[in-house]
Length: 161
Image 1 (cartoon, helix red, strand yellow):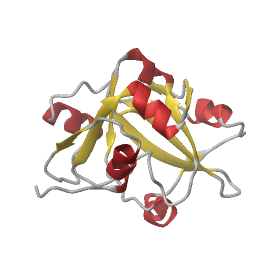
Image 2 (cartoon, rainbow, N blue to C red):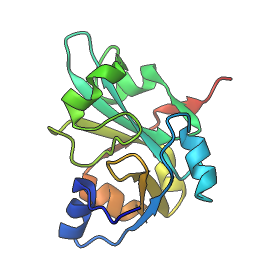
Image 3 (cartoon, rainbow, N blue to C red):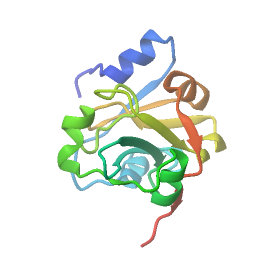
Image 4 (cartoon, rainbow, N blue to C red):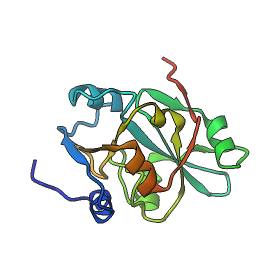
């Protein structure tokens, strides 16, 4: 793959944060867990970015390990809402500036409250999308949380099925 610099990478560069880019062959059938295994990464350290909305169109971003599911009740409580639901994938690009499979918690079209699952603190390294399908960034949990100024809360549950 040709060398690519995405906005999340540029943000980390400007912040003086060290990170490693990992690439993989694009395939719409791949899950986050598939990608973690392809790259030899621990699925508990690879996080996916999910965008939710309230009935009155307030958006919230939640970042959880690829092998887990977002607990919508815990997620809503973490941002002081009664309920949140997953945003339809068709709206993702217009709201965040990212496509499904390439959504990074950094550099969305506008700033949203972003909550990272508390399991992020179980290790020293985290992998997140670099903002383009086929690209992951590996960085320290400390730098990830410092640069993103993200909230941390227990928002995930074991995947069902």
